[in-house]
Image 1: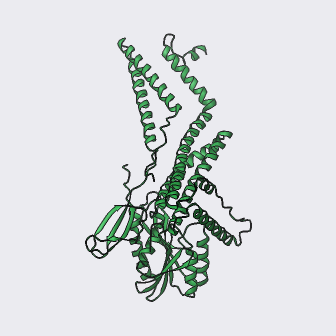
Image 2: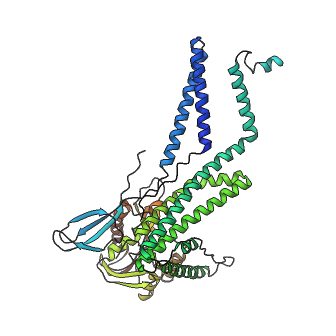
Length: 131
Length: 373
């Protein structure tokens, strides 16, 4: 059985690529014009340069967003743990869940007192996402 | 007039200014005539993206189901065709023009569906034992849910594209975040069912299992077991669905049987179930109330309500809160720990609402997958 499935291919849409390309080209033109007019002491140079930098920042943001979305495509499987407890001596064994485990199932003998151990809990721990 | 209009445009040599002005006018005209169509295209792209994700989840679910059937059931022939047919199963709900008696019709339909599903799973996985059959049935039902979600969203997507109706597309795009959440929950459930892990919905069954563990159990209804347990000086008939296979059983029939056996001499009924939490509430919070705490199509709730009304038995509810995702995913630690809190609340409730020596029913409701007794 597969634990992790292959995520779908990173299908970045043509639309996004075109949008990013247009923004990059326009930003580069604006920056070029900004530098060109800066030499001739034109006050509009600063505006062109500002537009250029904002455009580049937007393009970088769009690219990062696409990457983040692709990463999220993974078919995540949670980690589930089984706790086995010896009712007599209190020896506890925590391991990953295995097929066939169920709560109140009697399992292998206790390595300490040889009494039968029992599965007392099966759960997954969820780490809250940072806000 | 001409001079006023000419002020809108910059002076002769400022080519960039001209270009920007024309681009601005172009944008204005474009959004005036094609704004809605552009908005629709953006929305359709968003829906399409989610549809791709849904298809991926559906396909993965189907693949996992197929692998589990082959691994556990060891079918003599390839089960692919049979599984694909199963995913397309439909159940036609009874006619409700004359609603009188519809509950019994629905009850019968659900019984027929259940038997049919079990038979199908037996044919797909001849080597599977009873517990594995129940788990496989649950796995197939989760795969079926994913398949239906994908098909319905695809239907409205194509319909929206064909008709170019903004309202169809807009509604679809607005509900998609919730649908995606549900689909991801079913994907998680599928894995849990395939391996037999306890799920959040089993919180009620877990409470009952903890109460009845170590006591003799008997089968009282379809997939329902009960044990008589002394609790705080009261005689408690504790019932739950029979684990560790994935089933919810027919708790309604179980409760009715105990009520009839005791000739209605029940001081109170306490029902424990998982319930939908609101955003902002913590998973695993325990709350109390009155009424039959049981979900599903409503048949069992109806039966319980009819029966308690006949004998005027008070029904109390203890609920363990979680969201839809947690309810069908492997059980969270918070929900598991909430079972002990729920037991304390039940004990307190019995001490406050009943007398010593009274007979009570404690019903743990929910899917008992991965939970024995």
